Length: 255
Image (cartoon, rainbow, N blue to C red; front, side, top):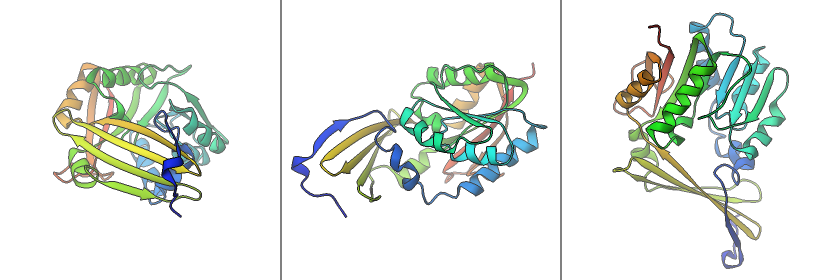
């Protein structure tokens, strides 16, 4: 039921993903994680022989980590949100571990065979310098023959499905409003998520940036990566005008 009496609500602003962490899986309950996982794993298996260590950047609530672990792989999940990692910890069984770090500056005790970042994690990097730091950190932790897979949301997706739109969700005991706007000049997406629960209201602003394929390819090259494939919407087809998510399969350049 919608929460009433808004004038008496205690309002506060929180860091992204802290207020919505307990509800995140509810917000994405429509997502077919198994199909998504099968695609990610198929990319890995086609490029890497017997991976010993997998790393997920922006692992969130750990849905993919749990699936990789359940299939016998060793995986590490990295996220900067402690609240999201608290949810992920409930899934860290077998060979799945998580730790809190900024993906622009992280290091590992041993190198990874496969690194991936999905669900527009890299769109949260607001400058080219931020993206380059992510790529640099990945290159330093990746084996010479390792693979780096990531996605980027497209401008078509934002214009078509988010700009100027508000969605309302009603998980048990709360109401969540998700409002979006897009600044085409700055290529910035503003997403305001407000959680109303009992007599409390918590808002968090998410900022993301749109990057195009040529821009990303150039930045990858500057950080010593080569692009093996660019796919659209978690298929093995090239992106089109109406592609929602653009998928990059890369490796350290062999120069």
